[in-house]
Amino acid sequence: MKLQDILTEDCTSCAVQISSKKKILEHICEIATNRIPEHSTFELLQSLMEREKMGSTGIGNGIAIPHGRLTGTKQVVAVLITSEQPVGFDAIDNRAVDIFVALFVPEDCCKEHLSTLQSIAKLMSNKKMSKQIRKCTDSHELYALVQQAAE
Image 1 (cartoon, rainbow, N blue to C red):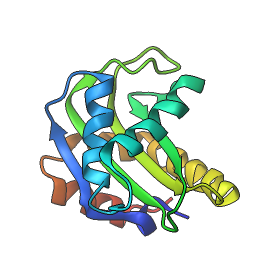
Image 2 (image 1 turned 60 degrees about the vertical axis):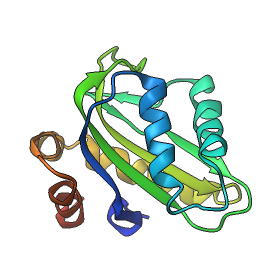
Image 3 (image 1 turned 135 degrees about the vertical axis):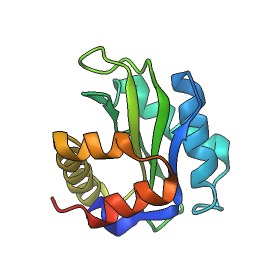
Image 4 (image 1 turned 90 degrees about the vertical axis):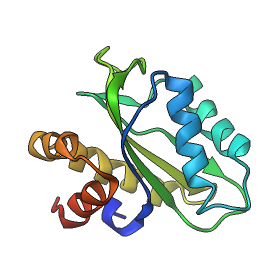
């Protein structure tokens, strides 16, 4: 599954003013509850935090792909956020992160989950794409850019 297939405009937020890892994860969860009403913001945050305990989802070059598994849900939900200032995220290259692509997936969709993560990592690691993402000035522009992206 590609990011373009699962990202919705209401789950896209550009240039947020948040300065900590915990706050950015909370913001991601607040946005995601619009698409996953059967789970509370706290439950969504717990799913992301459980994964972060295993190791940071900061993949380098200012990009993080936090993700969590959920019981009792059938749909995959993506949230794309850029931050106005990079946030310390314990990324593998120790760089602060300003592009966050979060995924919430059903507990029983392990295989699809991995291929979606690979697809997102490939898209985001394209230097031209990440540069364009960082230039976006509003959420609509950011969403449209992702929808037009070719992997």
